[in-house]
Image (cartoon, rainbow over all chains, first blue to last red; front, side, top):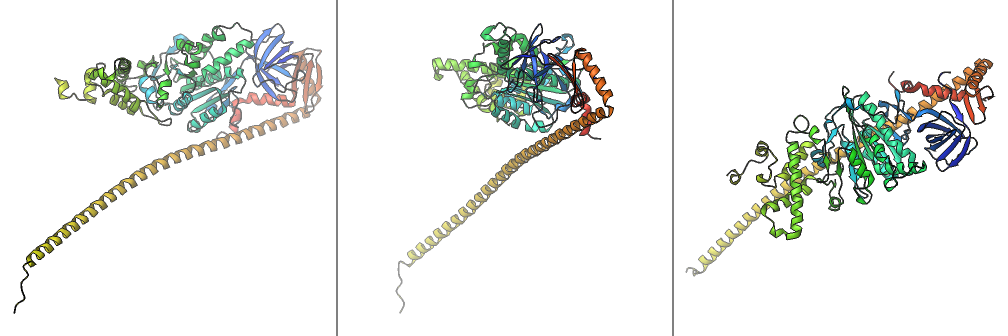
Amino acid sequence: MSGPVEVEYTGVRELRGPLVVVEGVSGVGWDEFATIVLDSGERRHGLVLEVDRDLAVVQVLEDTAGMNRTGTRVAFSGSPMRIPVGAGWLGRVGNGRGEPADGGPPVLGGSYEAVGGAPINPVRREPPNDPVLTGVGAVDVLTTLVRGQKLPVFSAAGLPHLELAVQIAAQATCGGEPFAVVFAGMGLTHADTAFVRDGLAARSAARELVLFLNTADDPVIERLLTPRLALTVAEHLAFAQGRHVLVVMTDMTAYSEALREVSAARGEIPARRAYPGYLYSDLASLYERCGRIRGRPGSLTILPVLTMPAGDITHPVPDLTGYITEGQIVLSADVQAAGTYPPVDPLASLSRLMRKGTGAGRTRADHPAVAAQLIAALARSRQVAELADLIGRAALSPTDLRHLELQDAFRDRFLPQGTDEDRSLDDSLDRAWEVLLTLPRSQLGMLPADLLDTHAPPRREERR
Amino acid sequence: MTAPVDELDPVRAELLRAARAAAEATLDHARTGAADTLLAARTAAETVLAQARRLGEADGAEEADRERVRAAQEAWETELVVRAEVYAALRAEVRRGVRRALAREGVAARSHLADVARAALGPEAEITASAQGGVTAETPGRRVDLSADALADGALDRLGVRAETLWGPP
């Protein structure tokens, strides 16, 4: 035989909820991965939550139902959880702890990687560059996703964030370069799980998708693993195999709530709203795994989706996420109430790295100017709408009235899009021009004259 | 004797001519209207037909796309199930092979495995021969499984990606 002999510990002192307290252990560390064998021969898995002298507290991933104190054996792997990585994951569906959920054999990767990941050396990071086009006009034109960026979607209960996440995962492309999507679903209902699988069937059939699905009724500790598994698989696809990889993680609020539960089980001192004090650094340990590495092809882009409880953007999860990420796409209940999909609030949304991914040679030469002008015009439109509420529409100037028309044109002709409509960037930008040209040239000062001349030749009265 | 001339004949004739002319004009108008209506109807029918054809083609293309994705997905699911069966068959075969090898080696193998177990758990470990071959060893609170099946499973796990040659191209 080869390989070290695996010692199993049989001294189970206590079974409490999802926890197993094992005595007589030695050399066991925090977060170590454990395999638990039941009397029946069934195998389960766990993570070490706490070690004190010869006692180890193990959280069982699959729960402790059916386990006995006698006859249960626990073996510790000597390292944190590892997962096989490689192209074998493409087209596969795993559960929240990385086991196949599609009826197939285990995923046999060429190598194993620790799911905790290794942070990218800051001096070897390349700045994000070039776009990931999502086929969603409001995102591509106004908050362009850039390769290597982390750009969250801020949503609220009842808004179609899952539809948008699935649509982006189904449609995203990187200009014909090798591309893959890793989708991590956390705390999803079974109906949502079915929706995700159906929505991404074509991408999965094309072997461009890896799905990790943790459902709402799975143990919470698995929810902490799911994004880490997804990122570990994605890192290998990106940096070892040269693909551009988009990781969609939804719902990060469900993840953070799982973190809170596990922290409480560990007896840690709660911080704001009972989340652990390390929520910021824990979220950063996920989000900071995106990027590009100098000298290596491929990139890892992260699109986390989170729901703001009661729409509160100051809640710790969106608040701390906003400190780490590079902008946000905000979904609005008001836009949703008007029956518009996707209900993106353009003025609250921002992609901080957009300039690095747009313009000539990347998207289209007029893109940055059009996006900036459209945002400026929409901001003015909102002010005018507020003014109209105060003084009445009749008292507005003709220019102000044109701004109200622009707002309507934006909501009617630019924003609305079908959930399965893959809109080209050219189409989206042309629509943006159509909306902008509801204003007179004098109000389009952020657009260079040559661009304006191409898209809207000046009328006689404007030439004078 | 000549028949008396009705002085109203010219009037009658003129009325008759006017009536005939009006009837002819009405008929012409009706014919033109019918032709126009027919033309308009034909044009409308052609437009509706063209639109229906376009919609039908689009619906058909969408349905074909959906069908193609569904077929690809089903084929992939079937392939995964078969791969899982082949992998399970490999595991069963490896287990049988290890059992046969341990049975062939007999006491020597059992003695070697017992030494390995004692090295892990200490000399006081209680060694028990496993029914399928190999041994298990136990001390209070600790256990080592060196049975044939455990050894086979460990070997298969270490095989890793090489097992993919089972379903990869030769």
